[in-house]
Each structure stands twice: as structure tokens, then as C-alpha cells.
Image (cartoon, rainbow, N blue to C red; front, side):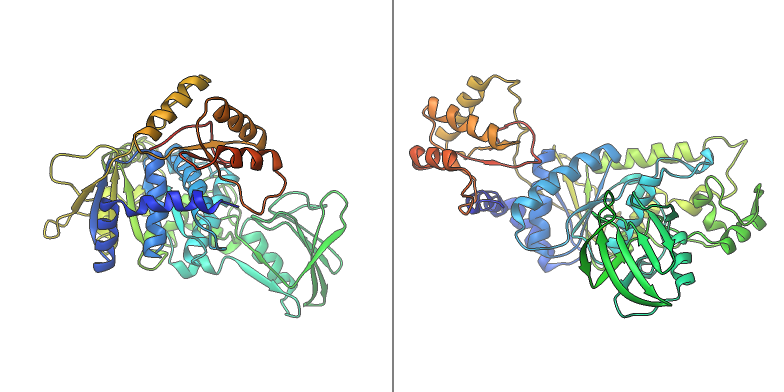
Length: 462
């Protein structure tokens, strides 16, 4: 649990005048177009969480590629854990496909599952912040209701035809295995159905009497023993488009396949031949704030993607690229009715260009200041000297540590160098008397530091 002093410290950054100007415009105009410059990657993550808190609207962040999405996602998760105290939907990342149509291959199962769950969360309003690369944002989608119906909630006392349940499981990516050991597996033995749902810590065991669900229990994979009785369980999809023999027969009428009626490599990109997709990821949630990180880089990533999509003209994929992907101008028009915020590390001196081309509504520009975290490469004397320098200049400094052991070592070092500090431990944490004693000896805090498991090496920030 985050110490209130740590949470208040980061919350105070929301009082930055430039950020307050952005929030104020969003409150006045739900479709405002704005630009905020001067933010490092870490600062962007913090202000994304603060913006979500201030507006209470779903936030969708578009970045250059999967690597950038992963990095920003980890930082957003960290600040979300620090700042949000209630049990609210956590941030998520929706990755881009790891293959292209011309490769005639299906996406990796983990990518498919992560995308399927992410789209369902967005459509079902089960998320707060969604981070996605350009290649994912350009993918055409179905309507929100399509993704909502992919998940299935089972409740004790309800009836469901067993054959329909098994058919649905197979269509959304679950496979039959006995015994069930991994996510995405199910098995049926008499009237007992074992399923390992997506994003579940343990599989569930459903006892059926005919079509009636008599009980649902979580069980341990190793011992096969029930550990907890539950009243309901939600089965999330592992594929963003349900598989069916009817679909594959329709596709076989449109293209040459080896075995009509059966799935084939790359079928996911062929679906628009028979089921055109007319929506985008941004239409899956109501009135989101769309943040574009470094729009020039995003536009470049889109251009590179389309160059790859249009390769191999001598061996084209049966479904044209524009049936699966939006072009960059199309995406711009698609977003014309959404609120937009552009984030940049360096301010562009020319008139800010919006992701959405609308000359009649110029984008408002604001700027703040941040700097990258410094790396000391094990030189603790240099780190302490820099921290002392910043504190003397009126800044507040936060050191993050991976573990309690590192936290204790930092406490000793601060004492050794006579730097006053305050521990970011929860007051109810009675397991750290050694640290609590040193926090008391240190007296009034001039610098603050805390333990955060997902953070990296100690790095002061102003």
C-alpha cells in the first residue's frame, strides 16, 4: 500500500499550470484538441494517470510500436498503483499483430489472447487506460457489442446447454486437454467441466446436473483439489474473432484453401472478405480522450506499416490491405469527433499540428518541464550528492527500491551522509521496526523515498 505522503507528492504535480490548462479545456470542450510538450517518457506516464483521474474518461494512448507500448505501459501501471487507492479497472496494453497478411500466418496465440481480452475490456468498459501501438490502432474492428458477447459469465443455479457452452469455448480459442493445466484449456468428464479461463490465477471446476450449473469451484492444478467455492465465473476470449465451420466454408468460397471448413494459417486477415469491418478501436468506448505520443513518430510508423502491407505485388493476399487496416488519413478522419491530446518531449516551435486535420479548430499548445532520470551506475556518492543538491535547491527527491533489503541499505546510506529523509512505508506496516526507527531518527523529511516493487534502480527526479 502506498504511503499517503508519496501519493500526495505525485498528486501535487497535477497542479502544474500547463497540465491544469489542458484539464480545464477538456472540461469545457469534450472534443478539445491540445498539445502538451516538455515531458520525458516517465513524466508522460505520470500525467496520463493524472489526466485519467482528473477527467474520469477512458484514455487511449497511441504510441510508435510494441516496444514503446510495453515501456510506457509498465510506467503507467507503476503510477496507477501509486496514485489510485480504490478498486478500479487497471490500465492495459493492446499489442499489434506480430504478422502481416502477406506472410499467410496466424498471430502468436499469446498476442491473440492479449488482443482479445483487451478489446473485450475496452468494449465492456472494464479498463481505465489503454496503450496501443500505431499498427494496432490502424486495424479495423467490429462494433463494441461484438466483443462484449465474446465473454461468457457462468452462474450457479443457471442453465446452459452443454453443447452450446463447449462450442462457444472452442470458438473463442479454448482447447480440450486432460487434465487442465494451462490458461485456455478445458476438459469434460461426465458432469464435471474443468476450464482455465484467461487472466485467472486458478482453473475452475463446474459441476453440472444436465444443463444446470450446480456449483463452481476454483481448484489447484497440482493437487486437483478444490480451494474456493464461487458463485460465478467469467470466461474471457482468447481470440478476437470466433472460429466456426460456417465462417471457414464462406472463406473457402472466396479463396483457395486446402481444407474447406477448417481453419488455415492467416485466416484472421481473410475474414473481411465475408464480414467487412467498419469500426476502429476508438469507437469501442464512449467519449474517450485519445492521446498521441510523438505524432511525427506515429505517422512514420504508419507509413512504414503500409509499405510492408503493399509489398509482394506479385503474390498478393486475397484480402486487400485496406480491408484490414486504415490508412493514416482515414484514421485522422475517424478521430475527428474525439478529444485529442498530443504529447511531445520537445516542443515544436512551428504551429502545432494535430493528429486530426481540422484547420478551423487550431490545437491549443501548452508546455511544462521535466528531465530524464539520471543514471549513476552504482556510484552512490554521486547519487547522494545530486539528491542533496536538488533538495537544497527546493526540489523534492524520490528514491525507489526493489526490495526491503535495498530499502534498509538506502536508509543506512542516508544516515551515513546526514541527509534527512522520510520513509514511504505504510503506517500500518509493523514488520519493519528497523526502518521505522531510522525514519524517526532522520527527523523532518527533506527528501522522500519509497519501496515500489515494479520500479527500477534508484533515480532522483525533480
